[in-house]
Image 1 (cartoon, one colour):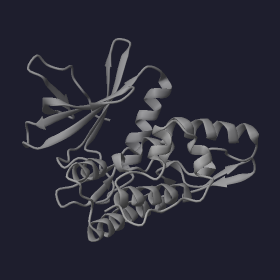
Image 2 (cartoon, helix red, strand yellow; image 1 turned 135 degrees about the horizontal axis):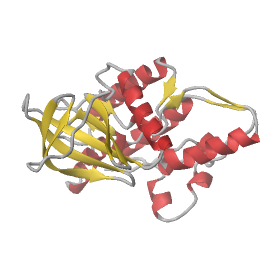
Image 3 (cartoon, helix red, strand yellow; image 1 turned 90 degrees about the vertical axis):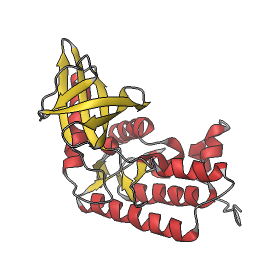
Length: 260
C-alpha cells in the first residue's frame, strides 16, 4: 500500500513518493470524488478516485476494489496505478490512482453522437462489442463477474478501444444460493450495487436454492449492445417514467426496426 500526504497549499498530493498536481474535478458520486491530476514526475494525466470511508466496512470494500484491479493486466480492463489509504484524525479516504482517458466513457460517445442526430456505425459497434467481450472474458476467466456493466462504466482509450472500469461491484462469478436469508441478502446487495436498468432479471428476485453466475454480465452486455445501436438502454425509459423495471425485464423486448 502506498502512502499519501496531506493536500499541499499549491494543490499537490504525494502518492508512493510521487507528486501529483490537482487540475480539476471530473465528477462525484454518493461517497466518492474523481479528480484530474498531473504527475509532476512524468507529465501524464491521471484520474484520482477518492472514496470516503466512514466505517471499517467502507475501508475493506475500497481495499477489495483495489485488489480486483491488481488481478488484471489486460488492455480491456482498467489498471490501477497506485492505491493508498489517507488518514486525517477520524477521517479516512481511500485513494485509487487510475489512468485518465480524455475520450471519456462509451455513454459520453453515444450522447455526443445523439446531439448530432447520429449513431455509432455497425463497424464501430462490432469493434466495441469485441473489446467489451474480451474484457469480460478476462474477468470471468479469473472466476469473477463484473455485475455492473453499463455504458458509463466503459471507458474509451485513445484508439477507441473499450476499457471496463468500476470494479467495486465485482464478486465471485458463481454463487450458490442456499436459503431464503442468503437470497434476500444477495437481492439487497444487487439493489445497491447493480444499476437497475442494466440488472439481470434473476437479481431482482433471487430465488432460494438457485445459482447466480456470470450470465448476469451477459444480460448487461445485451443491454449495452442495445444502447450502442439505439442510443439508449432498453429499459432506460421504463426507469425514467417511473415504471417497474423488475416487471419489464420479465416480458419480451420489442426491438425497433432501426434508430435512423
